[in-house]
Length: 78
Image (cartoon, rainbow, N blue to C red):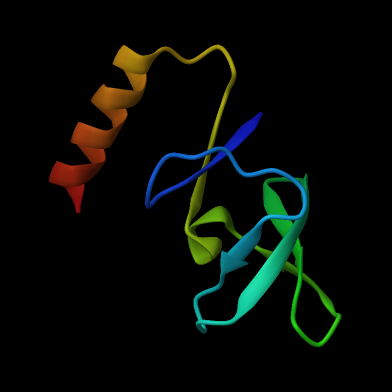
């Protein structure tokens, strides 16, 4: 499984700073059971959905063409 940022499609790795839906900076720790685990500024581990942290998940076997189709489809559904 690969995790990427919505803003610029950069891959997310352990230790990256992410911004949650409340605007707080969190440090990414791991991906577990479809949730992203991050450490909040006060030191608590927080489980959030990828969308709440401005990220999306994709399988490693996905092609660029398939991703483009998914993005276009989600654009028209929203």
